Length: 336
Image 1 (cartoon, rainbow, N blue to C red):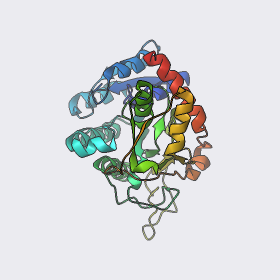
Image 2: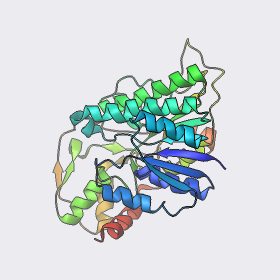
Image 3: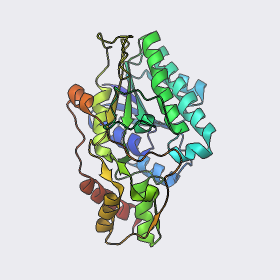
Image 4: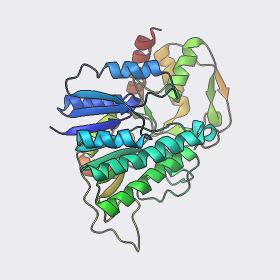
């Protein structure tokens, strides 16, 4: 029976991945620091879905606390680590840069050290579509260079990929980075657009529509993200024998290292998302058209050919189905 460490287990993706792994017969140790970046009540509610599972154990811990984290690795001897814990949010990184250094850089090197010293067979970790930054060639491909991030959040995620490659190269640690594209769905994050729009529309308050609505996002339903992570975590990279330093492929290496996009491969206009929300809520939105925010990009679009080739999976949940499921969950959870 494989033992997984899932960091960020009280988070949106981490809690649902933990459930999926438990259903698949894995043993899961879930770690989270339950910080107050957003409502901790929601985080505890997510954990409540896991607490009665026989093969689940929760540990409250911060990744930046090196000594207790190293002790956890020594005690538990994990087979696979899925690192989803991070300080999230593009705009918050402009206001609170140090939070991103502590969680996303210090915390990540601690994870790498734990994996290196305690025989972890595979580290899978969350990167982000934000790493594509100033790139404009669509769809975004893992084989494109991503050297122009537009926010510190994006820079920390790119840094995670670089750090992971170093450990794969130096120590033979198999690592796989996953660039998530605009994840949404039940149990989602209150700081994200789907949540903010729903809350405001139901309260009769105006919503902020950035870049005057001229935005396209590759919205990806959480169940699709979780299935992709589960499959990738079971596929240990071995290195690309055709990799060449003369024409280096950014997605792979001679070392046991790889990165993948996980996105719906079907960008959606922001105004269509709002219209679909209005239909599901039975209420029109009052829209405040706003300019583009610092650090944001007008469009995202994931090339997922490598994901489909290597693990035979393509996210496929239509935005209309995903929004309907989210709204039903929101009404039930918040009793509105």
